[in-house]
Image (cartoon, rainbow, N blue to C red; front, side, top):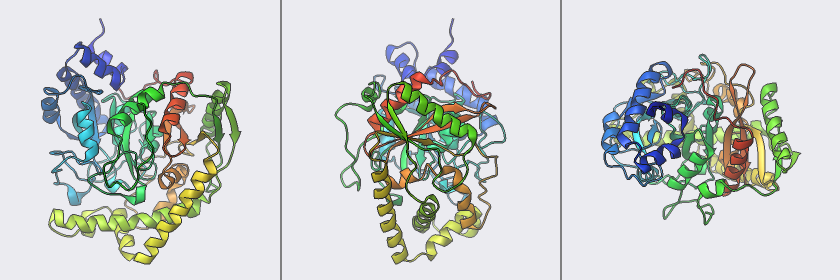
Length: 476
């Protein structure tokens, strides 16, 4: 007889919700199963930094059993996500005692979808790392192999989902932070189109460069989560086109013959790992075998100059955020309140003039047009998610004080940040595996507003190159 534990670790979020909807299990039974797994696995992985079990149990007792994710255990990322009554620290000593006083709009929608919060997942301080190693909470371990990064900044969620603590969890992305940990941990991570998910009550962040969605183990869970939280509110600065049907329904449709472009040539001139290149080429070959038209096309932009521009824009908003937080915390931030790299970002932001910042934004808008126009002929564009396998822990070291030297280490993510600044939807799928059994993400990029096309192609690849059977050594 199959136990609830065995069922829970095998099924995705929608399948767990279906069991609740049919009355085969109760939300509380599912929640207690997830709590048991977190208690068993988290001491080794350090993916969950705040346990909110009592909050979850209370929610389970009142959950709408007809909701899309009825009773499904969930983690919110400990960065930028305001969930009333939960810690809200951005993994910073400066905010270590801060608790959210209200729900963001996306959180309100997640609650309405039936998701049950059990904790907050680990993230690097202020999110500025593609590894998850904050000094406040300690490093998250990759469940596939100790000693390599789980990715960042959504590394805690990625490790928890990959290890089966929860089937789905919140993730966010300012320069690859959904897709990079999805690649490192062998799961699904979609960065949606600019403006697809409102940041309300906030108005904007990084001029549309920051995005919220989720990590999951199936394409359909990601599509259903998009259905649950997508949508603008009056006054939002960006409003992409919305299809008449649900993304879940559209994700199930076999795509017509697609025109697909691909590249294995990094736009910053750095090398690509042979196993990463092989994973991309195998994906392209599979798509060609499915009847799609494919052609190689190298992206027409200077990755080094674009990265310098993007990382010169961001510190101004970081400095502004910490200035505003002084009113919340009751005192200004000091050098001793944050990690050295964060302080370097704040100092850089304070040093940039309004004229410089306006010029950066103008140039980024021009670059957005150029990238989107370059790829517009393609229904789907394929790239590596990362150009290298996951780096050793400590490679992205936030104790560094030289911001330019630190930012220069981000060369592996040259295919991630262009789609933050251009606003195009991009998903990382676990379609490759190294000889040592480490996941390799392959990225699919769509036209602006066309998550439906990205999800449909992803479903086709999920069927042709399945990953469901793969499970990391540290898992339920």
